[in-house]
Length: 449
Image (cartoon, rainbow, N blue to C red; front, side, top):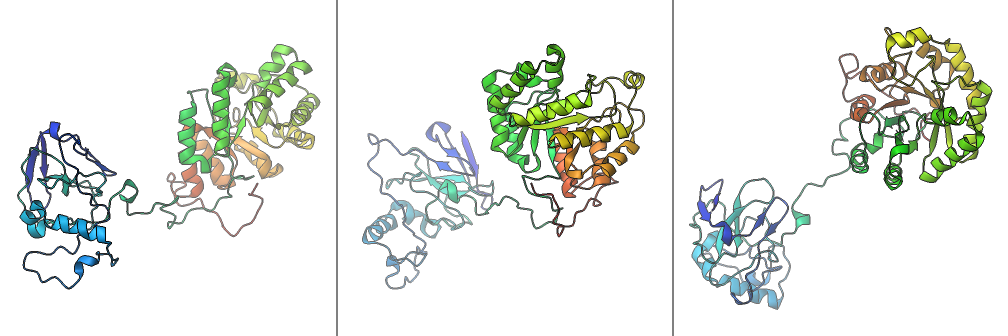
């Protein structure tokens, strides 16, 4: 049984479900028409406006039947249909209550109007409450007609008319937030980690970027995970990133190619060609596990660029970085001087590197104390639009935003993009950053790509 109650009048009706087969939702109302075998053809009510229906005894102005509530003249056919409805037994029985509230809409294409008997069903299109409407039900008794809300045949309802609120891309744009360069940009870049610690599927990435693609510039595969994926699935995942204006990076898997091939040029070139064929845009050139001469590293930068890919060396101060080793292991391996790092970065930039990834291990990751002195040396000695810091920890990326500003280039996990976006835009943060991260929108620097 289907129990309905009007919120204002308290009128209730119990309707058998087998007689209803009705889909009621905020977006549409679908009521099946009776079959031709069981019912005679029903007169249509499309474009018929009965807003001029008045209670009994009301003096109707002259020619009112020729004008709709919207002021448009009715056609002869429409006036004929309106007259048929006016003489219907249900309209006569319900009198002044036989008009629907004009704030709600009913589509005659979804409602079968029977001259013999109509039954009332309660539904609401807009506010999640019930209001009175019509449905074609053959065996039920109509609700008692005294109700607070009058009924009124209004203009036709369609699913595109359910919402009277026009949604824009930024419904809360009236609230100020930090101005950031639009995509493509050179500063304020956010690169997110793709599949590694957790799977990142085509569907997940597409949904993530639909919501947050404005704040994501690149997607990076970690640990060579892409080499284990089915080729068609890998291509599809890369295509999704491109569709949302994001570049795709290989991560540092070239270390694997170098180590297993003993630095074979033919193997490295085949690796680069395969990356290009799959649609990768950026090849990260890391050597955290390898002892690689600086000149050889620079030659890899040139070779990568010659294949139409963007070379992105990863440089750090920690020997053995990239394997998430323990603090004790990294301390035993030792660290390099920040000047060693800066000298190599400058060499790689001269060779054609488009950007440098700064390895976080030994600086802010897997250390007893952060090496903020190294961060200061890097930011002071290198161009801001050419460096990106690994910062897959909320405390770490908050530190970089505090010290470099909202337009710092950062690499984070895909699960952290929302928190970072809120921090960049200055709309949220912790006790140390809330309402303290700001930008000056009049600055026309090198942020645009």
